[in-house]
Length: 532
Image (cartoon, rainbow, N blue to C red; front, side, top):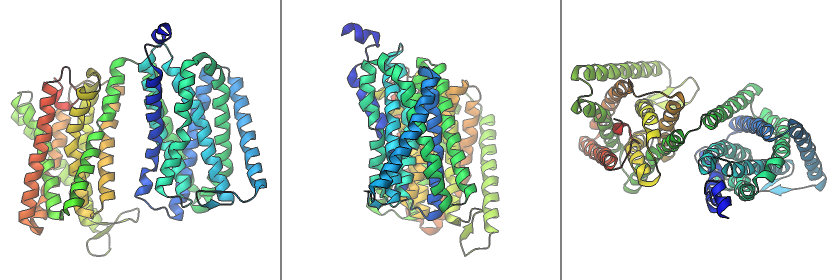
């Protein structure tokens, strides 16, 4: 047993089971949008197109994975066997008569059964691949990298399953549950494939080809035709193409990581993903307080502005006090960033004001009605997104130098993003009164930072010039939120000033705690200000 463990870099069965269960649970995240969005006929057709694209991309990846594990002829046989198998299943369901699933009956229920069954079937191949990767020469580190890759892939695959279910009237809760169920074979198969890696390696080519054949047949015969019934072919085809492109981009990123693998990049990749937790947690906390205490628009706008002002001043003050940048270059970059965002914001507001709609309503090119207040808040959130983008680049340089989980990375990274998510959620909630929109905006900000950090890791950039970029984006925060706080003062001066004070104190405490944690944590370079 000791030899077996040593040969696998001391990876235990419980470790494989834990990581693969978390990987399967990530599939449920694909159903989250349907808690906030109701599908009409047009959107349902587009969702079917997106589901078709995700399934096609997954089938391409399965074929490629199978060819990498053995003979291509077994993959071809698997594709043909999968197509025949799913065709026979459809015939059997038609002969069986009236079938039902999740309150869906008849032909629609048969389609849902086939889609859920196929997505479940293809999870067997993915679980086997994960188990084999843990048993490889690089052991735990390579296994975690493959697990993260498939976990990220699982989210759009869960979205595909949820779209098929939601477009047929299934509740978001049930859609989430069934999305997770389709990925349960991953942890179930991963453990035995880890223990018996050689045997599962030989079986993989046929299994992956079989799952791919099932999905290709189902997409062409059922999913795309359903989409064409509800939406125009151009919209469905565009959604499918974008989905394929997105999935293949994810595959390319993880392929690059696997071929150019080193421990520092893997550590940085994990830290970058954790960077998205802070804004999301900040948004959740703000919405919870706003709903509990019934915060008004003026107070929320003040809170958002106070946080934004601290975020905008924090990095420039650090650079100035540490003598890393002179006062004149710093003021020039702040002024340039401020002028750029101000001109962009003014131009967008003027462009919107030319649309002839109701008072205080602006119609975008897409036909969606957006109030002037909401548009101004969205533009302010774009400025925060640019700030998150620049700090994500700095994180991508710093994160590979961090090591260990727990207190070494999670706390400083989460604390640094916490006020940013609270600012966005406060701004959007104050303008729209919608907690759904607030959480979605915080999640978007949480996505921007990790995306730029991962891009920085893959590009291998250094830190030179990033301070200038960060100061430029810091300058952009001031004009956006100055206009928001002026508007709040006109509504209720006392509440807006109170909110501004709360925002300043809250952001200062979070960022100061981040700095203190980094100073007292060995090699903690997981936040931009910790980069030396």
